[in-house]
Length: 207
Image (cartoon, rainbow, N blue to C red; front, top):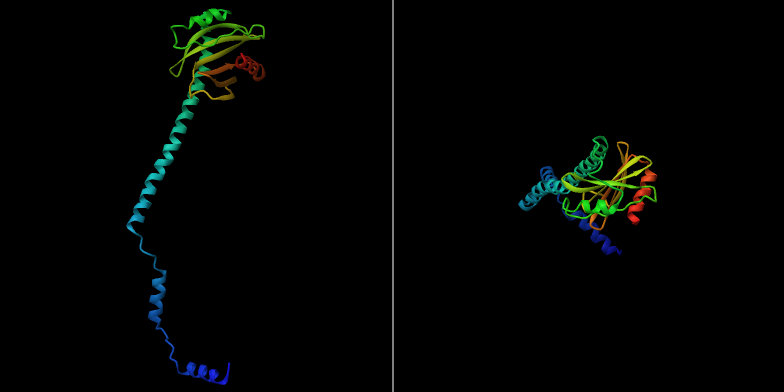
């Protein structure tokens, strides 16, 4: 910077008046900066809509799941009750036979489907007979088998969401296997141990 520029800069600093804001102006400026922006009516309605719709959407998702779980629990209880009742009430079979060609035709006219029936005598699971059951209002063919003096109930019904695609649970001292195949749903229940009852399930599935 040359001497003329330096002189001019010093002269401007001395002669130029600086604006010194009042305390009131400074306070108003700070208040205006802190004040929130006005909320548009559309934003208010969007918030209210979200507050109303979010619980409804959540309910529409959760309620069907809870309902299905309750139905599933009731169905499992019905399966256990039917198995116990068939043993205690001496009503194990409506048709007693080891011949599948006798048991299978017996269901004609009693239910609107023909359940697959087989005898696994050579594998240690002889057919005892069959009977008609209703599980939560679903017409069901109950096929009865025996193994080492343990009774096995095989429930066959039209394909239903109440039966799992493939599952095994132990409840109230019973082993319960479920699966879906073709047009049918299958449920096997017994107080037989899991391995041996599992072998029986594999026999049916591979038949």
